[in-house]
Length: 156
Image (cartoon, rainbow, N blue to C red; front, top):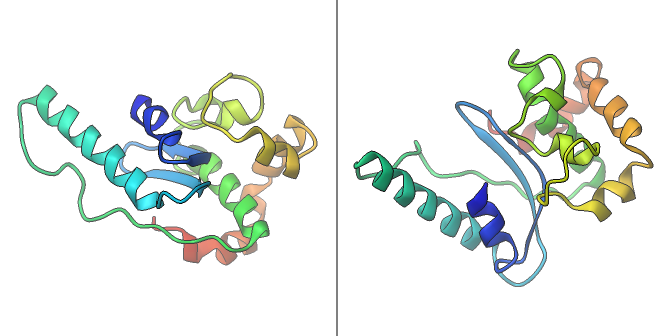
């Protein structure tokens, strides 16, 4: 995450939501300038792979296949993606509540942590309070129709 913080500003990227899982990750990013998101991803993962390879005294790739991305062009689906990303560790049975998972920015969204990898304006534009977002996320299990609608953006 230190590398993400290092590259977001120079690459003109905003992190909307993220969640790091043991076998995959989700980043919901917004391109805020002329720099393509692919440049941010390439810088980030090249630096990460080099650091891990140095640390482990190894060489080669760490990830299977290329990263995948999709353009989200529907604001309603964007909000549901945030919820999906933040609820992912609960759905996987790793925690009971999303705020218990330290490897996402959910705790930042609801004010339990003061991380810098979140877009305050985005959050406040869509939810009037942390409690509203908490309720929205916890309703996830009941709303399978919304999950079906955002399916084209998911690569699980």
